[in-house]
Length: 119
Image (cartoon, rainbow, N blue to C red; front, side, top):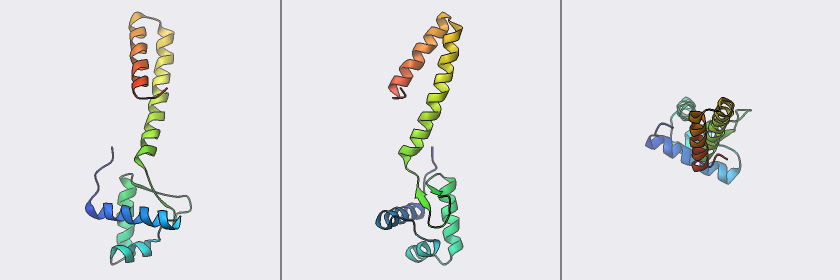
């Protein structure tokens, strides 16, 4: 789960997201500095680094004008893929054990998979 953001961080995220939607690329640190009323580019870098650490933003490969807002759904998809792999591995093991307890565990995993739409 991500840490909560401060008001300033939410404002910065909103600015970056709006800028990207309007321009199809992210703002430069200098543009962010001017738009947000910061005194220096290093202040922008600090705020961006904090948002990256918290999982709200990621930098693209080139780094320049390559900030991306990380959507919650993409984070959930990653977790679902991870969970699906773990459960598949556990199912494979339980199928090889072939005890009544393993069969119960297997049925429980299948129910959980259905509930979480992991099929």
